[in-house]
Length: 531
Image (cartoon, rainbow, N blue to C red):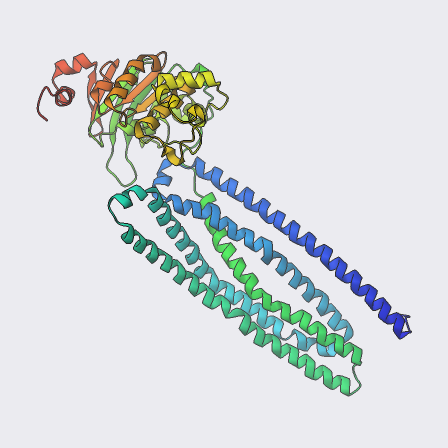
């Protein structure tokens, strides 16, 4: 290179060393930050896309899946992809780049020896693909078992009160132990195979290295190869072959990521069965006429819950629905909100088939107070204004008053700003129910559905809610599903269901006079006759 003096050569080598190390440090920082940012971005976008897709799925899907299993996909599986992008993807690029550059240098400097250094590469590549195919089903089993374990943990934590009340802590620890051992066994099977990759590949590498060492040394001793070229070749052989041992860990990360990615992709490919309609229905334009027309419906794998069901609910009227458990009362609500689709017949709102309506417009027009009240972790105010996020505090207090919730809210430590805890566990069942009613009242929907809305309140609170029912149902269509017949005695019409069929329909007085099932139920609840 024109630098003859040995001291000058040392100086230039020192300068080049500093430059190379500085560049290496800069690029190490750049690849570490950029790959991690990329991994975080992909992880975020994939999680949001998967979660958004889950929200569009029909309710039947959630009944078939465990919450813990879905959480495993949204968190654990997507995190596995992040780990691969953080480390494995960059390793593949570095090893591939090194291999290409060093191979070219080999064949330029000493083509007669270079082929020996290349001997292990076909074996390494074959071994890598072979191990991938063997690892894939094992890591798929690992991810499946993670979902099962998470599902069991989630189920147990949700039912901790039942576990404690039945003193079954040891039994549940045993069940979790079994699932955890199954996960450990699945992981152990994958680890055993994955761990064998690097030792086997190392033996293939040492063959190429020793062949280069011996054959190149012989050529050097025979004067056919310069000592400097030989020393560089020995060094480059190590730079070429030894990094390939990292492929074992890289392929392990890759297979874990692919097993997780398949689960996420399967979730994203789950078909959305409740197809959105394209007819807009602004809430302020909804009158509230509801018609069930020859509706037949059954849950998957079960007998029909509704059979040729017909019901007309005029706008602004209040309808009570009663019947034994399993008669189809709550199913009417599920169908009206399009949580499920009827197998036959149709449901009309203001003369339009709800299957043709914009789904969000339909659900915005309906206020639901369910028997199974759900409150979010947050304050009383945040739970009442959920879905009506821009509400003034005065409107929130008016809604609370309509739901007979003002007194207990004012007695809370921080009034509306009191935190209710996860699922509202800091409140009683009746208090949670009243907040749920207040939430629906604040929404001010043209259609209000109360599905056993007073089931968790005491008699005094129920009487108070009944007193405010006239205000709550004013100028809106109201559907009240109830076991307590006193809740619906003032309804405009009362529908009695039995085995998915309407057997009675009329006002409270008319049904009592008819002397049918409603009259018998009323007699039992009021003590007029024996059960």
